[in-house]
Image: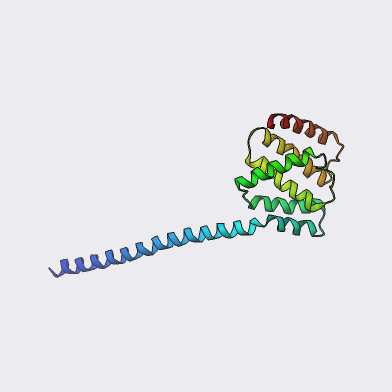
Length: 170
């Protein structure tokens, strides 16, 4: 009889201990979720200032190619919002239509900003605007890095494709 009593008490203690372990795990999960949300909020807050980050990259003494590679790292960490994609889409189309989109290749901040914007339009869009953004991005990054010149065959070919995409966009 004593054995049954001790087994009962031991079982009750184990169940109580298990119950206490379950509660912290649930709280830990909630805490982990809160921490994740906080990290996401922190990331979004930090990345929200992408203009500042581009300014820093643009103003350093690195070569254009190195500045571009620094921007690429930033591109991998940022997630553009739907409203930004829409804004960026309008911007790159208007920039191209102005005829001046490749007029300031030595203006690091302008070029990096336009590469940034076109990257997200291409990445997060579909159809003709995606095609347009792809060719715009190619021209921006290759002329900026000095791989192509603004009057190269590759640039002209991309511009022909952008013009075709514009017909579908409008």
